[in-house]
Length: 315
Image (cartoon, rainbow, N blue to C red; front, side, top):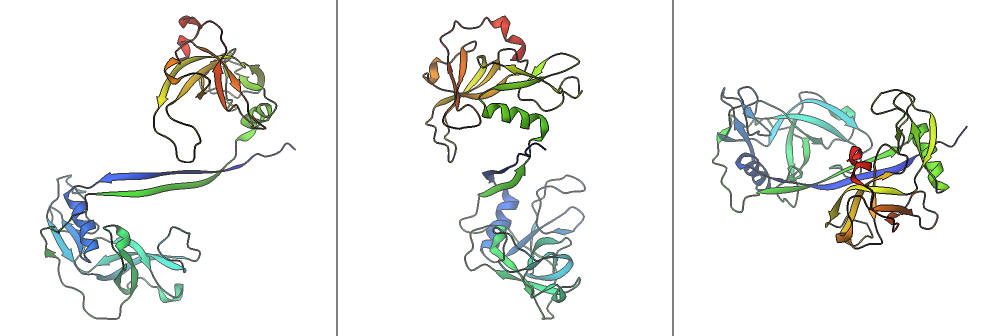
């Protein structure tokens, strides 16, 4: 049985959002230990607030303060918290309808175990010691034995000193990638410094890298064929923003390269030439470094540029 290839991969980036008047007031309110909702055209109080009525799509601006106490409407136990989750100890995910609100807010409940959680239980906000204007300013919810139900929502003008106008949220996805049979064969060839594709039995086009099926005809592909290693730059872009963790100085060029005998352009970095001298039609070849399983970059071969008609179908 051939080796099954896997690789741990992480996609992460900071998601930056500017806030309108409703979300700005909501997050600034949390910083000030105040929970705000928004009143809809039919009089309901939505917490967390939204900017447009979910029924009529009308813009909403009528803010109202609700109580920091509420009732659990449903829940699920989390026995193994992840590193980025609000609590280090096991907790319950809960939907809490705060007193004065007509919708439920998703957050976490600090409880000793699932036996201590139930639908209908009373809870209250436990504020974070340090608050910055984010949903995490609610550190969690905790059981509440008091009788005070907070009363109806109270109108609020949403005005605070130093309002929060934007947030930056780190987005991250960790997963394990398995390339499958076609791409595994391609990667095995790359380890031998050969570049291979697969030919479609219907249209006869060679696709690199292969995916096991023709993207045009939708039929399985199994016939392997070697392509390149030389190719032609079909189009490119100049990168001026340095990627985190990448040891490549900017600016540099990333290009689509049509390898000889291939019918699909792949993308790779261009090196060995000033970024402002890269051009469409330039002939390039792969550069391998160390024991890498794929080319580090492509460099000019010194051949005459390819005629436009030779690669125009691959733009």
